[in-house]
Length: 388
Image 1 (cartoon, rainbow, N blue to C red):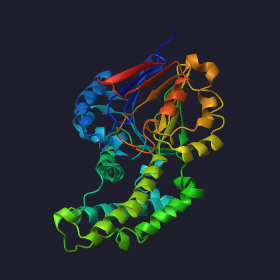
Image 2 (cartoon, rainbow, N blue to C red; image 1 turned 90 degrees about the vertical axis):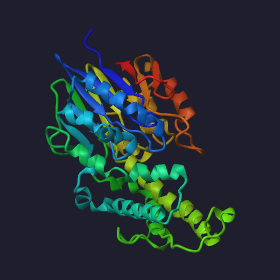
Image 3 (cartoon, one colour; image 1 turned 90 degrees about the horizontal axis):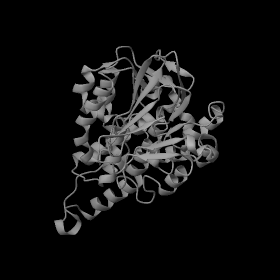
Image 4 (spheres, helix red, strand yellow; image 1 turned 180 degrees about the vertical axis):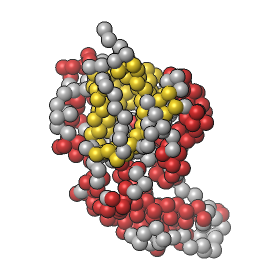
């Protein structure tokens, strides 16, 4: 038998970090897809040094491709925190999703509402910080995951030995590395991500923009401001006046949450979705693509989905909105269960109350469609590994 593909998934807590070793004739190519953790999963930071050291060791200090699927901290923070390791490694090329291009929103003007909403959300967070408003930990994590990433992106842009390749389906801004015996197809995102704003999503965007006060970065609407007022006694409303307390509760519930959730989902749908064909196997790594992205892929990538996959990295950490059940018969048909393997990079009890992540019913469905389902949840070691 020929050389096997090895997939090493690092136990980063709630986040993704996957190292692929891909046979390419007499060579072995290394591809690292993401390295991050959720902001409210702080205990995972202690794992980062050992993970970075293992990546360096496994690659002998050389990475053929480093992939950042999208701009969320649970997919990218580790690169920056462990930059001492990555800066001394020889990273041949960095791949990013096209929306991470510094001039993306000038080229794709239909997507600009997402940029304006991000600026408004940043203004909201700064107003809350400046006025001493404590946000719910889950909401604070959501804000940080979407806003605290500029330094991380700038660092990754300087890391590769060749210019960054910004990728989308059918488009590459920059020349992406290629290999003689490995085929990589970019299935998503679409070059113009405003395609994901259709229907109900467009209404959600309009509502979020209305809440934020669609006036650009300089002004964020009256409902996003927190004017200082006289404080009541601590035993009344934790040091807030009644009107301030009601305003805070209303703003977080109606305005900030609406905008933050939209930004979070919109960023997920900018995820690079990669189909990798090597050593006679098909591997699908969709980042955090949500159902809107999957629906477009189903329509525009029919040829790529005509055959099943041998390996699936489950999207969005096993969230209910990250895997389209209607596509599983094509991707993971039950009559081929003995040939497929599935990876879920996740950690329970970090996100989700009404819809906990990972989704138990989804995991049960996937279990019935593969010979091995591996999850990083509950693992105490540095990594789990599959051989494809």
